[in-house]
Image (cartoon, rainbow over all chains, first blue to last red; front, side):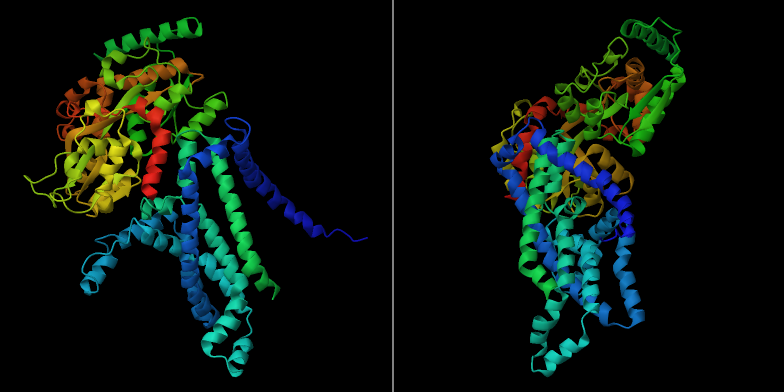
Length: 274
Length: 350
């Protein structure tokens, strides 16, 4: 008979915390979708009959889907530089990437507003250099939301990517190059696939984080960047309608699970298995 | 004068306690040992309320007033659903008052304890007493527009030729539809029920030039930063921006007034003491003090006798301003908010 590994008891406190602070309330909210105001599927029927809800969920998924690749594209070179820099530079890079985490989200968002506004430093600089003739509309649209979201979420892609890159043997790339692949081919066929576990982790974290965004779209986005969190807040805050809020949350949860499941089935698992 | 008023008030206390609670009438001043929990929106506003309503009330009655908050509709509802509310008096918005009346969230105002006759009648409700009035106004930059060519009314806000430049509206269906219809020539008397199609069509005409703010501080910031030349802003926010040196002025034409109410959550354990705290709020002196502190407009017209003449022009209920505007139709919004919010969201995504 196998003996129980007693280290397993260490999992009890975090599991209890999860149960009380997360699983409990979330189950409670989601179950409201089927119980309030009346038992049954009334909330889902209502969501179906009022197209705005599904439109907003779609919009939310779309915004997440745009933000995620941008985040990966911006984070990838940083992770790469971090991996191959000397120890001193790496420490600095890690510090700089973490720095935003030590500032409150609201402060950072306000700072972004100041930086990007019509008469802000960025527009003033571009105007002064003669690159643009009119101030660029960088705020209250998708651009503003993207800039705000990407800078907040970068650490979530950089660190997992960095961890993956640290494990890649430099010899693999050398081998590919010696065997005749040009650098681009070597990168896409050898290097990039090896970073996939980290890349997928990072992308997933970003994607999920953006789905629940509330402050950033409200302050940096325009009216077209309407996201589901705002609807959920309206339903609970203004109408006390926990049922619809639960149903919205459940649909969002399921949509996310399906999407991520598909993504990982096609790209992620293959990468891990390799 | 204060003594007389207090005498009336305390007479009311004894009566109220005796009648409502079936408790034997006690010494008039004796609310000692009673604790009233007051919930509001925090910040400078609640500080002012504490100083102008709660402290005079505590001094006069011996009751203790505990400050709590911030007021939150979901929290309020959860409290009532839980049986015993933690709050005795809450500062609530007009839409929550009207929504909450239908859901039986409030105690009826006891007119034997609250001097509703002190206030302008349009600010008194059966379930809540208006404590401050604020309004949606057309604000404009005095740098962008010189006297003589300044925007005056909502039609000007929609006039891209005469008033070019970025403009602002709130990202909120409430008041925005009214503004669009007023701009399109509908008179305040004929506004309700709102012609939503017409309003959204009107909004289409300036959509590309409009920034929709989602918080009041944002509306203020847009003016301070020169991001917009004109737009919808609340009077108190414009006052604050002007005080801090922003080149901003507001027009009072067709101002749309809204009211914050004090209400007593249903099932409050200190109903009578709560009513008496609300009564303290209705006194002209207390309202004037609050207006001088943070420039929210009083509901007791007598308050203007002691309001700073520098503040008065910014107040929605100042005699010159109150008659140019109208109170938003909260009953209409209660009945139509949900479908109209859905329409608004659809319009935003379109």
